[in-house]
Amino acid sequence: MATFKDFRNNVKPNWCPGCGDFSVQAAMQRAAANVGLEPENLAVISGIGCSGRISGYINSYGFHGIHGRSLPIAQGVKMSNRDLTVIASGGDGDGFAIGMGHTIHAIRRNIDITYIVMDNQIYGLTKGQTSPRSAAGFKTKSTPQGSIEQAISPMEMALTAGATFVAQSFSTDLKDLTALIEAGIKHKGFSLINVFSPCVTYNKVNTYDWFKENLTKLSDIEGYDPSSREVAMQTLMKHNGLVTGLIYQDTQRQSYQELISGYSETPLAKADLNLDQTYFDKLVGEFM
Ligand SMILES: Cc1ncc(C[n+]2csc(CCOP(=O)(O)OP(=O)(O)O)c2C)c(N)n1
Ligand code: SF4
Image (cartoon, rainbow, N blue to C red):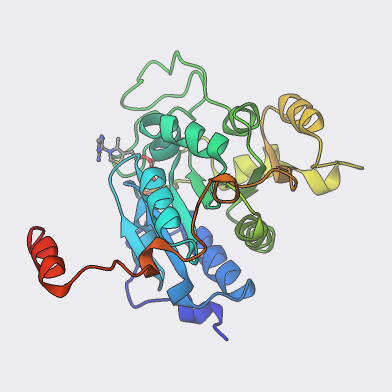
C-alpha cells in the first residue's frame, strides 16, 4: 500500500521558501495515501500560476494546463476515465478570475472531482498584482492607490452555484487540511476546497500572522451543522468568509456521472475501440 512518500517525485519545487503551497502539496500527498490510492490511480490537473506548478511536484498522472483551464481538462479526464481520482488545482487568479466561468459550471454540474484552490489573494507568478480575492483598498503595482473593486467570496459563490461540498482551510493546518482533502476525494460529486496559502514574497498584508488572527475554526462554533446551506451562508456572512473547516456538504445529490444517461461502466479510456490496426495507425499518425 502506498504511503505519502510514494506520491513524491524528484522534482524540487521552485516556490519561494515559506510559500504556503508547500503544505498544500504535503497535504495532498498525505490525503492520497490515506484514502488508499496508488500513484497510478490519481491525476492532478493544474492551471498556470506558482500554485499551478503543483501537478509537476506529485508522483501521479499530471497535466499542467493553461491559465484558468484546469477544470475543463480535469472534467475531460474524469469523464474519459472514471477509475481515476481527479484533483484539479491552481491559484485564486486561475480559478476565480480567468477561470471563474469554468468554476461555477463545474460546481453546478457536480462532476466527481476535487478542486483545491491555493488562495493567496494576489497574483504570485506574475509578481504581485491584485487578484479578485484581494480586498478593496489592497495596494499592489496594478492598484497603486488601492483596489476600488470588491473581493469575490468564493465559498458564498459556491453555495449559490449549487455546490455539494464546500470547505476552507489554512495551509499551516496540515492535519485539518489533509482530512478535508480526504473527505473531498471521498465525496461523490464536486468538492471545492479553498486553502489560504500565503504568498510571502508579494502579499505583505494577508500574512501567516494575519490569517492566524482573523480565521475562525468551524469546530470551535458550538453545534455547527455542515448539512444546512442556510447555516453555512449565515456563518460565512457573519465571519466575512474567514472560517475554516467543512462548511457545507450535501451527501444526497447524485453526481453528474451517476445521472448521465447511458454512461458506460467501462471507462472510455479502457473501452475496446473496435478499430483495425491500419485505421488506428492512420488516425494516430494525423497527430504525430
Ligand atoms: C491566458 C493567460 N492570461 C494571463 C496569463 C498570465 N498569468 C500567469 S499566472 C497569472 C496569475 C497568477 O495568479 P494565481 O492564479 O492566483 O496563482 P499564484 O501565482 O498566485 O499561485 C497570470 C495573470 C497567462 N499565463 N495566460
Ligand atoms: S511568489 Fe508567492 S505564491 Fe509564488 S512561490 Fe513565491 S511565495 Fe509562493
